Length: 263
Image (cartoon, rainbow, N blue to C red; front, side):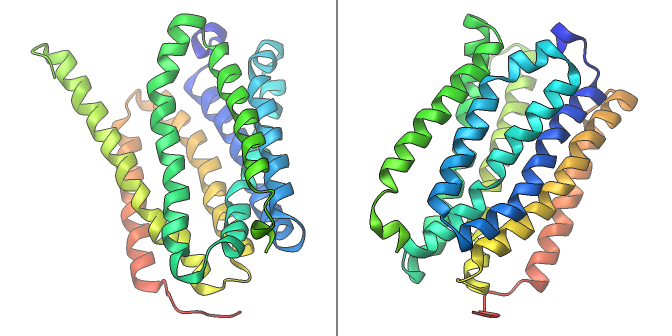
């Protein structure tokens, strides 16, 4: 895609940042709507929105860069309501003693989806071209959204080869896979911690914290493009990410609480 349109790393960073702008805004709105309206309907609308704009991504890219940036922002806006809505749904669906396990299972699905997408996307591109990736995943989103709406209609929810080059690539892939897998462990801690602090306002709290983290994601993906354009190396990028992970983990361990703070 970037080769076809001749995008620099900075431009690619801007395109990714556009997604997080929409994602950040609707994290805040989604948490409020999930708590005051219908989490099921908000989630369903979000799934439809991000799926449609995933499918239209190739059309937007062929149109112009501003059009693609807008498309990505709306896609992010649709996806941004997901996790706040999940918090609200789990509150009504699951007893308090199993909510952490339920949330860990749900959020680990996102990690699993990322792995599946990374494995299947190259095969799709090889056989049908890069536009097919957006068309296939967007269509699956619409199908999955329809199935989720049917399920959630129940009232309970509202109540290594010898080649050195190949060996190095295999090691790199293994490291990235392990990183994604280990990242999934945070679901049992951070993602469930909102329910510990306040069951009633868990959706709003998650919307606020996830929006703030997504805001940093908006800056970081653009900064990644700048770093790559300047250094042509991923080393500094991964070193900075590791440093932020360590600082964040230390802050969470020292300051987070599993005790109820308010209703």
